[in-house]
Image (cartoon, rainbow, N blue to C red; front, top):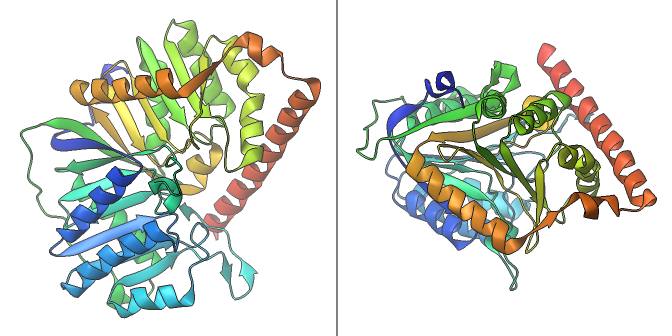
Length: 389
């Protein structure tokens, strides 16, 4: 990335990588159990399963200690909680709300989705990533967890995380009695001195920080880029930037899901394989489980971890939060982990193999691509229309 792209990174942080599975859920429990004043817990999906009950139990313990707990769940992503489960949350003293209900007075209402995943404790420590609260991210019945990552941070940028959380929460609540009034305080800097920046995508607030950072990476990377992407359907401008980076001699690896929980999206992504491979960008497919990660590293210096997918929904129709990290030791360590996953758990898709796809398979990919693009375009336009009202 170019020198100018480094200017807004802030020093004085601690940052530690967290992987999906027990490591993530234990880390969340630990910081929740240490909370003394308040917790903001915002996520897209919280299922009423073992993982969900485990985390809610930790939040209830905190509320009973007198900690002010804000639990904000996306109304579309989390739509199957029982009344009994919701009652147990609210009766514990947790301040609970669904973000942007889809149906209001029997009318369909499309708005930005809360796709970010944030746990903020006392304005001092935050866990941010792409991992939802459900058994499939923990691993169940002998199955590996869906592959994803988060990062735990301490330091000055936790103030910006609080600002994001307060605005999302206060937007969800109309009544003043339940508004988040926590003040942004001066936050301690740490001698680790990791430079990072919390990035927000929220089209309603004219914030496109994650999208811009990805495009800066494509423009200014000098040696190599590795991307792990779960729902990969970049627009034409991003595809051109990727192709130009490859033409400059940048070694680009894109790791995608071998199978997806949204099969039509996988077929749509498959349609892009010809373009990607033709531009000398290498494609790998993760084999052991579903890939849900949304991360990238560049030049062994810069990395990003969070909820942002490379598609129009994440650009214009979702609230997304990533952490961009400009730190060589952190990024080199993360890159080593990603390269190990590529070497041990992924299959490379070559041009020769891709050309063996049948005409029917190619037709299905083309049809899926057009269908998914159309649906995404309609959803984005309806979301934008909602903002203009």
